[in-house]
Length: 513
Ligand code: XMP
Image 1 (cartoon, rainbow, N blue to C red):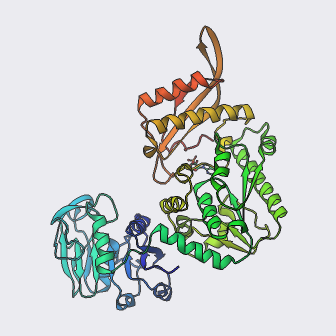
Image 2: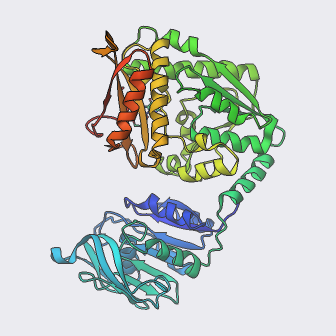
């Protein structure tokens, strides 16, 4: 499983995960590691290149994040970005000072000029736009370095020591606003670090399958399948690796969208795995009867999920391995590379700690979400499973406002299906990160034919967001909203009014409950 590795030393900048994604997009494997990691661990990674990230500090401030300068003696190329560039200059004898006045600070799109003889900028225009975000600047470059780019306010926007393979850029090449940023990163990876591009999903799949086969041998493996992208791709990978030794337990709580349970089951039919679908709709709806408080609904569903999974796991008997769909952002966000196993008991639907297994396997822990999707395609999972939008664990129970009943769920399923279908017809999926229907608990008067109706109001919700922490409502074209509304009120009994939620998060949340 050894790939050429780029070590990204994390000094706390806001774009650090983006740097990692850009490097991976170039076909090169990388890991983001905190600057506090011991030097021995960094060396053991045997990187072909190192990137120092940006960060919010000043290199001359007391206690500013730093790294042992021994790293510069390894003979490994280094690219410093923003703070990382200043830190390298500072450690190698240059000088970094705070901008004296506003004219020397740069934020946002900034034109810069480049020395196209420099390896990072060769074959690129001599002038282009960069994304700057810095209050400090390099006053003097260290010995051995030359200035390779400059802007009006920044005399050393890039520095280079081609002999040692050390490069620094004051701007952020990982951000889209830097016009040729991707090409610059690529040049560092391929021309300076001599990457071969050995990180492809096909290759990752083959190596993972081989490694899983070796690790698992003839033992039994258990996986809780939710139907979400991560657990589906993990299941497909394990299915490919160990086939009939794998048991997937898919708890269908009856709170899925239209046809979803059947789609998940059908997707796994081609593999010779043990697929256990537990149809637990009655059990879940029984527990939810009369419950209207959103947090109480969540709690009931979470607990019930565990009880059902546990009962199935008991029937299967002792298994050696439990598979979790932990992905790389979960690992990075946990702060240290070692913490993931500890929290993994809880990070997929809160599985019980005491299911009878010996070890946890996390086959996706190196991958970003878009890489997980690519791997799913590589494994032959259908596109509707691989590209699906996030769906909350409690399912439609938190999209039926108030008490959850089978009738209301069926009504919502039909309306939600129509919304998704019209969005697909209008080819708008790419513009929306999550979109769904909510059955409100409000009824109002309408008129249909010659008769009065007194039916529910359905709300449509769609958001555009990078991280779901904040979100903007999507500007869906009126014609599409009109088509959705007309089709729903004409064909879904029980709904006589459709509204569109135009609230951002904050102050609202994405889900209504
Ligand atoms: P909110 O409503 O908190 O949603 O703005 C942000 C994202 O989280 C999802 N979400 C959940 N996911 N269990 C989940 O697995 C939950 O209880 C839950 N509540 C919200 C939501 O769909 C959105 O993607």
